[in-house]
Image (cartoon, rainbow, N blue to C red; front, side, top):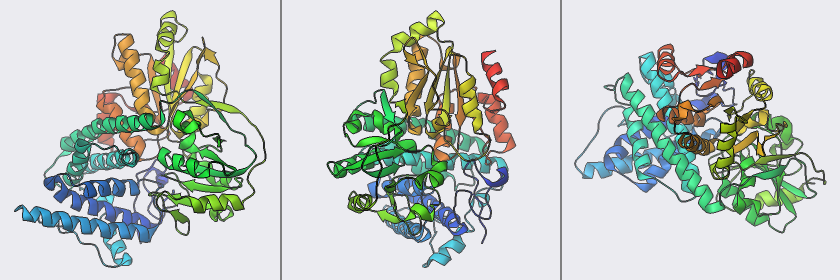
Length: 536
């Protein structure tokens, strides 16, 4: 069985994984995900013409998120999602026919095989390379598809907290349907990709409002990297609602809750930090979980993407939730975490062993609360430049660049950081400038929204455009949420972004030329050369 997947930064040989995914994805899972995407496009052909249907829209968001890197690795589960996709497509087809409209063609008439093996065989014909014969059009279609996947991840979190947006959901169906239209050209898909960036700004704002309305605006908070005596549960992923429910259910039970990876910023929210048993953060970014989790003496649960192939040493105490799944790992459905709690109570837990503290919670509300000090520091020359250094972390070589870059920055510069890329340097001591910490942890990857709000506010204070600010973006990427954040930045007209450690394998030379010409987007080179180009 063959596969081809080039959607993440670790694509084999910088081209694509064609034997097994570097992420651990097996060929049958890869082809089933291709099949699911094809099914979602078939569904979208009808949903785009039918109008809003809450069940179809919600399913589409979850279906797209399911195919993001490091989410669902369980073939039978994906097969069940494909079957449900077909059921919804038939529901939409019938409803549209009742209005006098019928559709024809291979995509519109898609029907999955009855059994899993048959679906896998079908999926082999629905891969990336079958999307378009023109390399450049195929490249932009991929950018659009990965943008939709990333946006769906953020929309899923927002919908869990009861937030939605009809215009965004309509665009998702329109864009999916558009990828099946052979009459559309390169600039049509460029336009749709930029539109995806625009809608993602809406979604990130929606999610930010959902988080802050529910849990309060983040405040600068020291987070303990050591341990407290007691039983323990480790939460990895991105979903704050799931963490809150677990905190409620473990209150008073002698179980301490630790965050991992992108859950670190949860400590800054007043509505979550009020729980005394939210004990601290354990470990670093997602790619180190296999060597770190073996040392966690409690239960572990993933609530969104970032799961890796689990080692046998901790697989028996590992759980998944939501859209995350791994073969032979226990999955929690719904909001009852009693099985996770019971497992934690069986295990030894930690002794009391305090460690280093790091700061988080510098969302836009916190930073703009001291905007007058920041502006004054810039005007006085105390702050010469701002750097946004962040994004996804990963295991591929070359990522030490970000640590070295942060370490070598002059003392009159400030670092904004977000997402798990910060684990490359967030334990280092950077000091402060007039009481303003030189390292400001803005939050999760979706909190790029906060970074944008900070930049816009600074531009307003200095009566200039964002591109005229003493601000440079040095970004690392790994998966599809990084793609859609980049589309949002491009939609806003932000230029001179450096990305790495390597450029996406799905960007063709001509499309790269377009990005360089219009946005001066480019790869990182060396710390010395890039720093000199920016600071002189």
